[in-house]
Image (tube, rainbow, N blue to C red):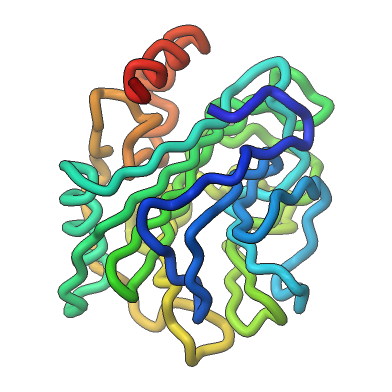
Length: 256
């Protein structure tokens, strides 16, 4: 679990398997508290810019805005290199992106559970990003639960160095910020899926609509915090009505 700090970040997290991101192969990642992931160093930016940014940074941003987990909410991360989570990830990626014959060997999950906007302690935003890798293929799932309204700017999507590849999820930099929980490119409310090992296109709008899938979340130990299917009602359901103490105890058991 990440520390309680405004504009903070996780320490460097070694990945158990490499993750290919548009031509670059990464073996580490950072979970930054303001709603984004970076690969080469922690990044504390709380003011989003719109994609494409033509910057010098590879960036995965499920919900980039000014967040604060000091008083309410938790930011956690977990990775898997074997077991039922990989089996389920393999099944879903092959459903979303057919004819690839994909097999997952890494699932990395970062979850922002009921984190507040800064400085509005008591507001709650819940979302998740899942990195799935296997061989030279890689994918991202972005899952959205309850999103409190805000007047802050939000950027959701991803960008690369010089914006050779980028995607901005509809609702970014728009006033109706709660739409993230209701939209999708895979016919599952609150979920967006992207293949991130491509090296040819410039604006990575999905060229085809992946096959629809069930709206039912996939539970792992009955905790949405470790589910690659946390989204929509899955993120705001009873599995997330846990005290911080209960989550800490559960994660301690997992890590021992």
